[in-house]
Length: 340
Image 1 (tube, rainbow, N blue to C red):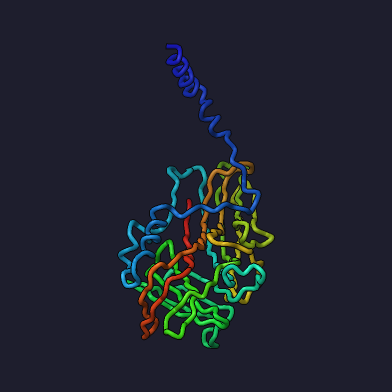
Image 2: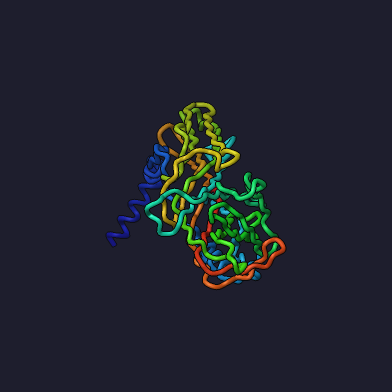
């Protein structure tokens, strides 16, 4: 009985004095003060889809195997949008390009990379570049359209036994896109044999844009922050954010553009052993001068995972049938998410 009376008293206090609502409104969410973010794993359903897809023989790696909404946009919307913040502009975009350095597996005395590859995903194609392409015609990279139905195969020849067989799945216009890189050598038996190369370093090229503008509620002093955030291996500009406080229409913007050729640009290489995951995020925060009321963000995440090809695969490269023999491979994926 006493418990029931206490609950009734609390409910009466909330209705008459509005103190419950006031306490909720007093909760302060501070604006972002640091550029470092933590990564989030790919959801279990999509991770399972990729795993099951890779276990299929090459001739059965088709679009129909990408089930369960794999290609649908990853978008998170608020359960109830705050109507007291009238957003005139909220634009967020992000992208991340990994550069993988490969060295001889188990070689700890020589850390010099044998070859580096950059992987630049787009909606309908992927661009691959090698730091040591064998042919001049491939020095600027290969732009490969995603197949419509079944995985295709690309043999990218690099000098010094740094060649790699790339498996390109049918991930056109998917929110998660991935490829498989299998370092191989072309043997005397006309087969692709494991060249025993491993990922020993990673660096990233990023692009991001965040532009925000809104009406300050009731002439109250309000604030907007636009920022570009990243994980520890992602190199951000020194001016990674901008902010503005105003009683009228506060606005802020920040922009980072990636270079045309990722391999031609400078950047710190992070020694690494895969698996590895990194992300960049374009972020907007709207609120009062002291508290965030709404966050909008675009995040792009790259996963680099080891994959062991256990059974031989008969593949087709251009007009030639080749056996792809068992050995180590690398799965590189990029996913883009938007949170309103």
